[in-house]
Amino acid sequence: MQARIRVVVAKPGLDGHDRGAKVVARALRDAGMEVVYTGLHQTPEQIVETAIQEDADAIGLSVLSGAHMTLFRRVIELLAERDAGDIVVFGGGIIPADDIAELESLGVAKLFTPGATTASIIEWVRANVTTPVA
Amino acid sequence: MSERTERELPAESGQTAEGHESTRIRHRVSRRHDVPTLVARAREGDARSVARLITLVENGDPALPEVAAALAPYAGHAQVVGLTGSPGVGKSTTTNELVKALRAAGRRVGVLAVDPSSPFTGGAILGDRIRMQEHTTDRGVYIRSMSSRGQLGGLSAATPQAVRVLEGAGCEVILVETVGVGQAEVEIASLADTTLVLLAPGMGDAIQAVKAGVLEIADVFVINKADRPGADATYRDIQGMLGLGERAAGDWRPQVVRATAVRAEGIDDVLTAIEKHRTWLETSGNLTARRERRASVEVEAIALGTLRARIGDLKHGTALSTLASAVAAGEIDPYAAAEDLIKGL
Ligand code: B12
Ligand SMILES: Nc1nc2c(ncn2[C@@H]2O[C@H](COP(=O)(O)OP(=O)(O)O)[C@@H](O)[C@H]2O)c(=O)[nH]1
Ligand SMILES: [Mg+2]
Image (tube, each protein chain N blue to C red):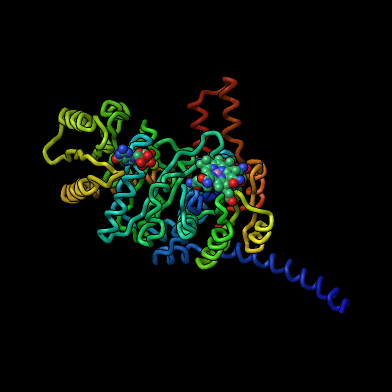
């Protein structure tokens, strides 16, 4: 049985904009990946613990609420605390260009904004997320 | 000044590039662990190591025999409870409530939740956790979503070995939620000590359950969504159907309980029924019988998998296709071809 890329797709924060997360989850599934979908209103603590228990290769966060700086930063911090910094963090939503630059310098691997095609997201994941080496 | 800056710049960017390189290498290393270390850490309850071991099992990693050998001493330490029933009947919600009750009783709990893989791409959306998020940060609970990875019996090929990993990790109760597509989902009965079949009024009713063949595998029927009209009728249907079956003295009579999982009602009754079945298993000697049946299914599956792989490797992978061409051309019959193949092993 071949290894499959496992991605946790999560919606942190209090808003209910879940279309993007669902579109991305379905696209990654259709690209042959295993997507753990957590549903809405997840705390960074829950998201990181989920990724660890699920042995995820990556965490994809969807943030349209404006709270992206706090949420992404906290997830990155918690992963480092749990010695799980090898889990790739990426995501998308309503995120201004300046913030994207800052988040990427904090360790977020890639951010997609409205209009990004699912094909480009799949391509990026395939190129940048690997399954574990035993 | 400008000279210094010029010299510093390339040096600095060189350092950054090196920094990136070394983080990448560090990442790789932190994801590679030897099996004894993983097992030792999993024994201490380290979720990451448990998770990695289950991945090795799921991927049929070459280290699998080593993993299985390391885990063998812990076999049988956990009570395994299966939950099956049509999609939407409330398996995940019930699992969540059972976890809550078991945690209140101080037990360590593992959950394996299987969802179907797409037959076209092999990918999967695993969504059972959505209903269990309140337990995510409880270190006494480990939840793992599994894709069925093409398997049709309601579990994935790796589920039995994942149960072993969780036993090794000290889980006292392991809840296994099946895919729940309904038909022929009987694999769970050979994995679990106690199998719960969930029904709900108005959907997948008693007659459906009989058709799907799940009547025979149920140790406990849970009529969930008892808040809905028709629950009493479903309850009576099932009781009636159980009355028809012949049972020898000392045989287990499946329990039927009502629950409203969304309101956490009836969960104690479900747990009582599970315990009652457990006691019967122990006193009647059936626990050993079930465990042996589980092991026999496991061993046979591994042996068949190995055989299939060896057949695939015969004559550098050409043996089967050569024989297949001959059979298709009518030069040899399929039984003779199969004999040929087996002789080659
Ligand atoms: C539809 C919508 C809603 C729907 C949401 C329905 C639902 N279930 O999702 C409803 C009507 C409920 C809604 C409500 C609100 N909304 Co609204 N909503 C939108 C709208 C118009 C489109 C969002 C959408 O679904 N897009 C389609 C999806 C597919 O695109 P997407 O999410 O952007 O995802 C793409 C990328 O961003 C990226 N991506 C996203 N997530 C992820 C994750 C990963 C892992 C990856 C790789 C990529 C990725 O890839 C996707 C594909 O391209 C946007 C405006 C806009 N143009 O974006 C406002 C918008 C997001 N909403 C906004 C606001 C303010 C609200 C409300 C607070 C309004 C109010 N005052 O009541 C409420 C909040 C309600 C709540 N409980 O949260 C603001 C947010 C402002 C901000 N962040 O600063 C926006 C930007 C509108 C605006 N210009 O002001 N909204
Ligand atoms: N009315 C009612 N709805 C329920 C009950 N239990 C679960 N549900 C709902 O049924 C839907 C499916 O539940 P879920 O646990 O995901 O079912 P599964 O597919 O069998 O795992 C969800 O919307 C639940 O909230 C119940 O006791 N009563
Ligand atoms: Mg479910």
